[in-house]
Image 1 (tube, rainbow, N blue to C red):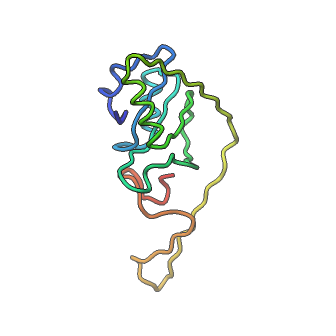
Image 2 (image 1 turned 60 degrees about the horizontal axis):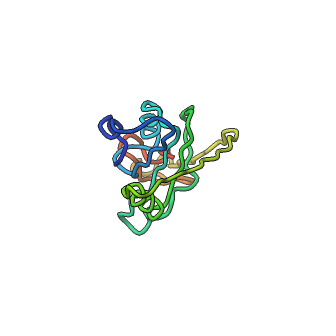
Length: 141
């Protein structure tokens, strides 16, 4: 499931379990907050595979959350392998998650326009202009 609503987590067993959720419908931080709320030991977000660029694992995703559990991004194919294994009652899945903590790194974007230019045309450097519903796009990651 997507891990974006309480109903997605009701059946989550929090005893030494790691949640597997699909990318989409809400942001990564919201998924992490639900994982913490339902006291799982870690969470894995796998890409959704709905477009050619949505099969690989997300990389270089940054944000501020002050989370207490590890989370990892998986490719679509690895996520599906875990789903298929978890659906097989003859299979027992074990995952070992190791994490390193680093100091936060600064991220900067440059937006430029001219005093007399067209206010609807802005140059954006170091970012992308698509976004999530809750953000302006240039700061969603």
